Length: 161
Length: 158
Image (cartoon, rainbow over all chains, first blue to last red; front, side):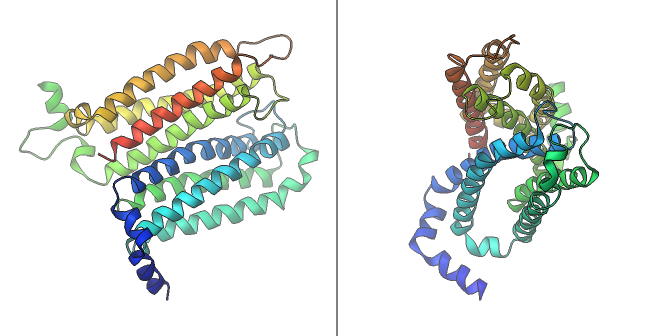
C-alpha cells in the first residue's frame, strides 16, 4: 500500500525533477541542515537551561516561551525540506532502515516535548528562576537532548545506508 | 612527505588513518561535526537574534553574551577537532575544491568578526544596551555564519 504510493510518487514529473535536476536536491538538503543549526541551538539551550547548565540568569519560561515561535518556524522549514527530499526518491527512502529509525526518533522526540509541555512545565511558575529545577523536568531535558543528538547521527546515517 | 605518509599511509598499503581506512568512520565524525556547528552557529544565532531585537529583549545583551560564551567555545572546540580530522582523510582533494577554500576563508572572517565586532557589541554596560548599530551588526554576523555553513555543505555536493 505505502510502497505502491511511493512507486506512484516516484513516477510523478515533480519527483523526477527533484531527483534529476542538478540543484533541487543539494539546495533542499543544505537548507535542511542550516535550519538544523538554528533549530538545534534553541532546542539545546532550552534543554540546558532546564538542566541548570546554560542561560541561568534567564527564567525558564522566557527561554522556552521566547524561542517557541522561532523553533516552530524552523521546524516547519525542516518538515517541508525533509518531505521534499523524501519525495525526490521515495522508493530509496522506503527501503532505508535509517530513514525509518530517524522518523521514529522524531516522533519520540515530539511526544517527549509534549510530555514536558503538558506535564512538568505547567508548574514552571514555582521554579521559573531556579538554577536547580525539579528532577522530573531535568530528567525530561536530559532525555530530550539525548534524543536530538541521536537523531542527528541517525539522520546523517540515512545517506550511508 | 612524512606528513602525507602519516595522514594517508603508504600509497599501496591500506591507509593508517582510520577515516581513510574504514568508510564508517566518516559519517560518525561528520555527525559530530554537525553537532558542533549546531552548538557553535546555533548559539551565535541566538545572540544575533537578540542583537537584532527579535527576542529575549528583557535580557541585557552583555549578560546573554556572557552566558552563551562557553557554549560557543565548546562548539568551536568540537569544530577545531572534528574539522581538521575530516580534512585529514583526503587533504589534497579538499584543497582542490573551491567550496572548501571559500568555506575556510569565510570561517576565518566570521571568527574575526565575532571576536571583534560582536564582542564590541556585547561589552557590559551599566544601563540597558541601546540596539542602534547592534542590529545590523547582528544581522551581518548571522549572514556570515550562514555563508560558512552554505559553502561548507556545498563541499559534500561536489
